Length: 433
Image (cartoon, rainbow, N blue to C red; front, side, top):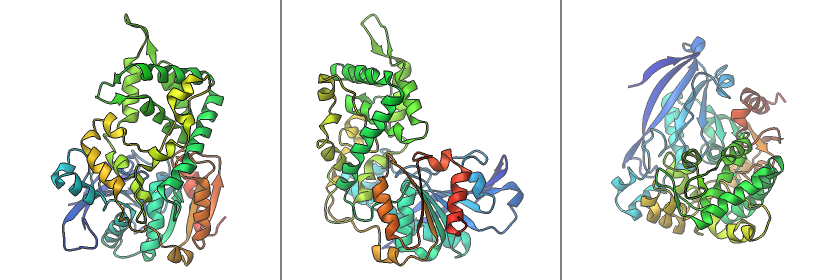
């Protein structure tokens, strides 16, 4: 039963849907999806077109907005919006260390998680669309991984789309995970260098923290084992519009004096635990590399293997000299499953996923080349999370896709730029720009 309630300027309705776990077996096991319908208070009784929002990730539930912030206010001027928790996230049959043991052992859990990629998400959306719109096509807004899902949507079920808007989420159609990370590490190094240029005092601060972690065992209050590699992964902040500033403030008071010498402060440890823990989004760690699997080659801990090709990221080697230590981000490593208590019980499952050789294609190049759905994409110059060159190559491969390439925003432009970003992209789908 749907439940409706109000927030300032909006009416919200909780909606739940039942879909097959395996869309190839529609009569088999089912899972539940959750979505939140949002409509402007003054339009609640109107027959409006629908806009589906697909969140970035993988592994994150849809935004829990209060009122009409960011892009949502612009969307509500003309749409009824559906904020979908993709399968395994939020309230949609969550997959985590607590629930996955219900599936059985590591092999059963790994097999289960193979059905949590973009192709399954798109087929979920199609079943939801038929129930919500009565069969009418809808507009999709895909942010980051949600954009990856949108390109799969254009490949698998374009008849369900009236238009598609993608922000920071045009994937390579054919790159292996190794190709993705070989392009990513140089970006991480550039982003770190840009941070140090803005905050030169952070060069020594990062070196001091890294040196402390190389010579001390540190376990954070929640049980997270803080290694130097885990600390370096805070570079993931540098992909957001405020990330460099947030990192600077985090680093400036890392140490406090104690009777036993300088130690990482409780405040620093508490904040860093919240940033590093995967407790709230374990699917990100479990299936992140699987979103690049499309053939018989295993992903095989790609980010970890490729990192070895970039020795400047080795903390011990960097600290042996006097140069800056690069930070990392948007990479998943096997040691995360030792450091993070939310992931430790899932290590064997992750190993099995990394070894799989039966990944199926997520994109249909021929169908994309014949695309007839109006599509517009924001491509952020030197995006930390999604390679710009890969995105532009894909843009050229999708018939009729219009791009807005900008360095005005980072990867979170649809949040930071809000109404202006969505307004620009919708106008592109309508040939108004």
